Image (tube, rainbow over all chains, first blue to last red; front, side, top):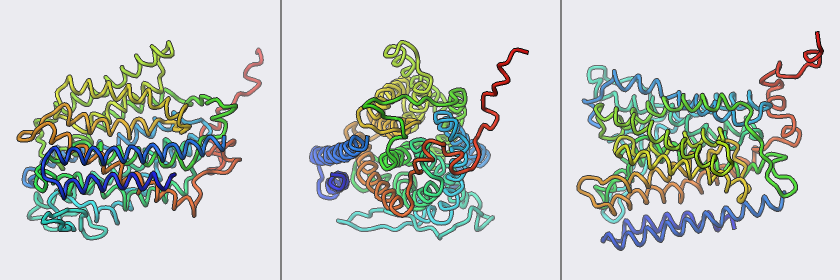
Length: 59
Length: 434
């Protein structure tokens, strides 16, 4: 879970970079950047959940 | 900035006042921890500042560079990506050619200011590791952070890196961070999150399925630290926006006003929220609200209007109040000083809010918001995994957390051999009638 969370964070950033390199119009770029940020949020949620579950087990 | 326009008489005093930010944060962190780890907290702050200064000067400044300085670029799809600075290792702050001192002043001033700002970023996570993070791993983590992590964002946002060149290369607005929200505060806050995850909560924090409140031991120091931090933040933001952006000395009064307004709004929002929720204002959360307002305001500095500064600060104060509770009660993250909410969350909010409340000349509002979102995505998407990976690696060889005895004895006795307040004991004879 932690590894997948970290990979999703990096993937989100790569989507944002890809939007800059490959797309030209503002709307397309906006959609891709939003998708990248969404992917990062998903990664952050996964990472947070993994650590919360770990703390719960240790409590 | 144009090197010829550098006003040394103005910038040098501003740089010299910048360490007051670190002094303020040190008092806040120390006061919010327990008395049995107070000396350790202050020594850890000093050691972090020392390690950060040395490693940034020797290695980090090489990658960080300065505006329009030498850099490593990569050409992708006919676009130049400026990824890293390429100054000589261990470069000096002396002017190479005294005859052209104005032209040489920018690299030297950039190095001197960043020796302080990297230290500030490095002490932010100490707050999340209070009462359980050992001194040796603190020094190693600070060295790695100062040499390899901080310089990346410093170059990308402040030293003509790819984020500051979005307008020229991609026809967007440029990512902007005038006072260090992205370069200093958010990386420091993300480091705090990573450290809190790795260390786990203090022993006794969660018992019988309930979170136990462990109040700070000196709230007067915490509140005094807020006042010191205000002066330091104003100096830091002024120096950074003069050196790394196209700001002019005439804009400094607006910057000072906005810093005070956003800090005030953050503090008052926290006072009101805690008054409504707990029937009494909470001094430690209100102090966090003050700093959160400063952090959020540091992204836009003088470029937002005073009403916008108040709104940005008050939302940062509200965000901090609720996030401290969510982290502690729902996500089981024990962050005694609230560094994650104050520096990471408020810093990210400040970066976004700057684009919401201002319009860059010649750019649409959406362009500006997208540019700031790219910066935010970079901070969360690459810096959090980078920082967390480095911390996990260091923790594997040099365990971050003190042992069980250290948890109960306090870090002062465990690591330093004596307490911060040796006279701070109750003597039975003081209560005997004379």
